[in-house]
Amino acid sequence: MADLAPDTNPKTVASSRQERSVASSLAARLGNLLSMPALALLSAFVLGAVVIWVTSGQFVTVLEAYSGLVRGAFIKQRGFSESLVAMVPYVFLSLAVALGFKAGLFNIGVEGQFYVGAISAAWAGQALAGLPAIVHLPLALLAGAVGGAIWAGIPGYLKARTGAHEVISTMMMNYVAFRLAEFVVSGPLRDRNATAVQTPRISRAAELWSLWDIPNRLAEPLNALGVALLFGFLAWIITRAVRGRREIANSKLQMADGRSQTANGKWQMADGGSQTNSAQDALRNTEYALRTTHYAPLIIAILVAVLSFAALPPLTRLGWPFADQYDRLHIGIFLAVLAAVGVWWLLWKTTIGFELRMVGANPNAARYAGVNITRNIVLGLALSGALAGVAGTVEVLGVSICRCLPLFFSSGYGFDSIAIALLGRNNPFGILASSFLFGAMRNGADLMELNSGVSKYVISLIQALVLLFVAAPAVVRWIYRMRAPRQAEEEAPLTRGWGG
Image 1 (spheres, helix red, strand yellow):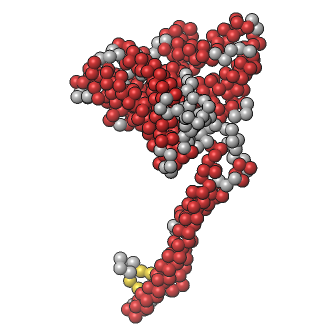
Image 2 (cartoon, helix red, strand yellow; image 1 turned 180 degrees about the horizontal axis):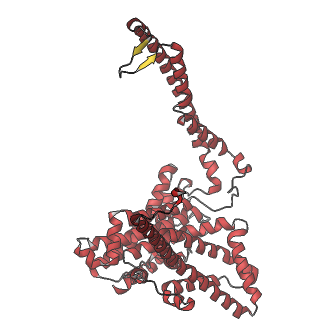
Image 3 (tube, rainbow, N blue to C red; image 1 turned 90 degrees about the horizontal axis):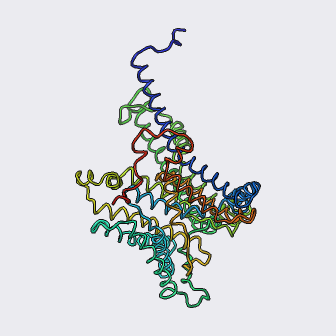
């Protein structure tokens, strides 16, 4: 029973208390970070319900509207996948806004950078036709990123060199991008063979794969890889068997020498160890090695072979979850997740990210520490523009019905992304969640209107309310009688862009 007595060592007790204090502090901080966005969402939906109730005169309309919103976003055929499709550009654009915020810059021009990225991708998609997909697709994505980076880099240079406010310059660049897109689509890049005003269709090699098309795309390379691995494993087996026979022959010679030199029937190894002089033991050891070692190539070969056969057309009949050829969900969803991880790594794990955050938090201290302010301002906006350009690229290469850039190419994603970035607290992983929420709202709006008669633009009202409550946390705290956070950073401005 003595072993069950509590530890009364003062050092142990103090350490335990410290661990509990740290855990409770982290839990409180996490709760504070999550509570504000959650309450902002709740408040926005409640006020949206009030607006619907007042305008319709019936509370049942509120229930019909919100049930239609949920069914349209998640339950109807292709509802969930379409919500993911709408989520992808939101992720890239919101990451662009958040990256600018972290550098102390308010990049309100992501919509224009979105357009320029789409123009660049449309050109690269058809001008580089003939390249293999493994080269063409990355080049098209790179073209969109470079276009967006250059477009955002112009206001960045003006900000760094002349002090021109980035809110004004990026906003003005939006309208230039809109008119540039109209000129390019109706002029130099217009498809003369199409009845509609649009650019030529991009090469199939530059398209982002739809998830339903992955089996067809991967069938041939997986088959070739599976066959190559299987032949490689067979070659390894033959090589290992020949080597085993040589080892047995060598062991017999060594054992014969051992019998003539020792009286106890054992032979001495080079490292001073000993081994029995039985040829059967050597054979048994070799067989054991063959059975138990180096089987990773076989496992990989079998897995790839299974995948290669699974990638054939029967896969769609055996339950491939994206078997509907009209499902528009594409591999851009994976690129969006990778972009979120990449932005997190850039900001918190690299010297470049540290300098960007330092410039955003306190440029005077950063300058005193030797950080190049001019370079980081231009770099911050250029990286932000590159992400926005990739968003436009994804729309052209993966979502556009004509796989081209039409004349009336309007997304409205850019301004929504500001609310998403604020809702996600400028955290890349928070942005993933808030982007999915906004994508679901955007996707479910049509069925909400059809189900209840409520205009789908109520969703825009709710999104604007989300932005209002997130940007004014004091209002949320007043409504719910919450205490102000203790730490000063929770109340720090989201960006220095307003103050110059």
